[in-house]
Amino acid sequence: MTAGRPWMLAPNVGDLIAETVALDPGRVALIAGGRSVRYGELAERAARVAGLVRGAGIRRGEPVALALGNDWRFVETMLGTLRAGAAALLVNVKLGPDALAYIVRHSEARTLVADGRLGPRLAAMSDALPRGSTVLVTDPDAAQDQYERSLAAASPIARAEPVGPDDLALLMYTSGSTGRPKGCMLSHSNTWWQARSTARTMLLDRADRGLVMGPLYHANALWGILLPMLFTGGSVVVLPDFDPRGALRAIHDHRATFTSGTPSMYALLLGDPEIARFDLSSIALLECGSAPVPEELMARVKAAFPCEVVETYGLTEAGANILTPRWGVKKLGSTGLPVPDVQIRIVSLDDSARDCAAGEVGELWSRSPANALGYLKDSALTAERFTRDGWMRTGDLMRRDDQGYCYFCGRADDMISVGGENVYPKEVETIVLTHPAVANVGVVPVPHAVKGEAPVAFVVRRPGAEVTEDELKAYFLARGPAYAHPRRIFFVEQLPMSSTNKLDRGALKQRARELLPNGVASGGRETASKPEARGVRRDGDGG
Image 1 (cartoon, one colour):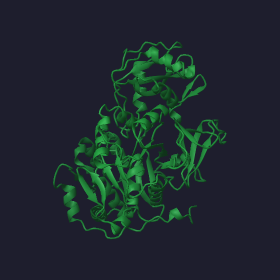
Image 2: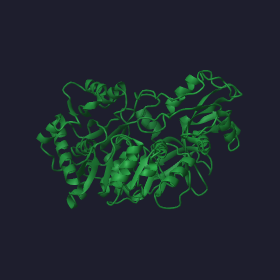
Image 3: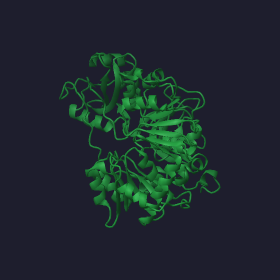
Image 4: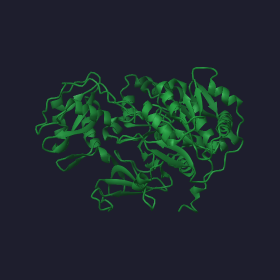
């Protein structure tokens, strides 16, 4: 099916840094955890990791579970695992113990490298391993730990294990918002293509320095920053966790030239009262994606950062870089055009499988070298999401204008049907965000006595600003369709974020159910159980 395509001639992804190592081993690859790691050192440590994996008897394509935070160990263990011919299982360490134990069992991993500070999560993963498995524990606060001792004693693997283009490279479990996490399988050719495509379409080169604000196990940081920078020979500043002040300081101190984040992350950056203290002039490119981006938020980002700002679109199963090359005309609110080698369709929601007309919302289908191999041990879901002729049904809603520019409307699951009218949370949020007193907003559905369901909004006010629920409703009704107006508005101190730094709509839906157990009446005046929600509790990260 893929024979003869140049991008299928991909070598082992563990060799991603080989060219830079050969030409400039002293060049800084990573700045993380208070230290700088040069390409030569990274290659040497990755080769030792490969020796550990080979010594543990791991077979070609077999997963090695990497449950590590954001530091150089994540990068070297991933490259080393791939170098040995094994597959890197990139674990979302913020999931709960039950979800983590399920992932380890489901993947049939027999080797685990984990951060010792994970506590009960580490215990759950260790207990889920089969008898006789290998567990290596790191302690970033110690000068020498079990992992470092094992690494020092390992025999480095001088040459990467030969692999086929469709051999498993990365195993990434999706969030599992509708059930158990699903193991998405990415090949060596998928991964190579994404690293190269992102570097080229975003015009990145070895002079760039990317800033990783989100978790490395997530596609936004992995394919948006880390892998393309290693491919080009640039450097990466890795923050241990997302912290708005820390991110601003990192740009200032390390002169980062670009970064990528979610809308929630940028809203928090803009809300930092000390943002004006930091020199952000080194930033040349900001990428925003992984969730629908309200146009008002994009306008605020463009006003705050003196650089190019692009909205991107991608997903784990079909590539983190599907839409928006850096060049060309930019349209506010648009995710742009497909990048080279990516084909898209926007398919009608009426079950006719026809292509949508301009302006019509439908489901995005994508076909490209980045499409995953499928889902581990789930042939039914793989057949449902991946067609025989190579298309991936994303489950995301898009529309195109008459020039072919795409506009991300959200997940199909997030669409609100109000008496037969389709309402997309992003469109409601964009209008609410234009109010000068609003810093951030999240919109979710609740049951409606007449319409079936209707939107409600959770709003974060700007510091010192005042606005009432009735005022915001009237503001929306003057600017948007009446059927889409939020029937109730709750003011909160902050919006919940998921483990991948997106707006946690699941937590908002749960809070809405708690506040409005009977939904809203036709007048939208159903009495809430509490007059004001001071904060939204985020449900456990247990998948």
